[in-house]
Image (tube, rainbow, N blue to C red; front, side):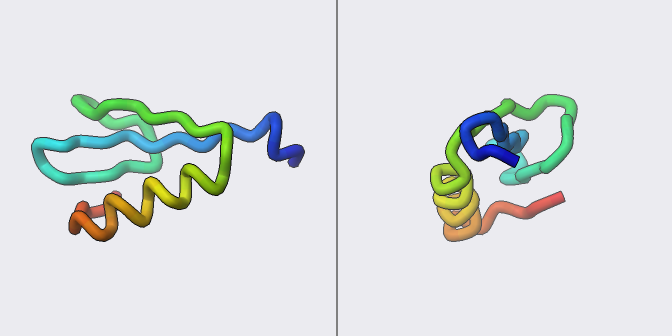
Length: 53
């Protein structure tokens, strides 16, 4: 897949400190067109001890 056309998405619930890789009720959608920025964001949430679902 061409990176320029790729879109990476996560849904973030800051109240419960949860990251979802699928649409989740009450979560804020974050979209990334850069895989590098997506992975940096994941690393930051991991460092902040967010749970993944």
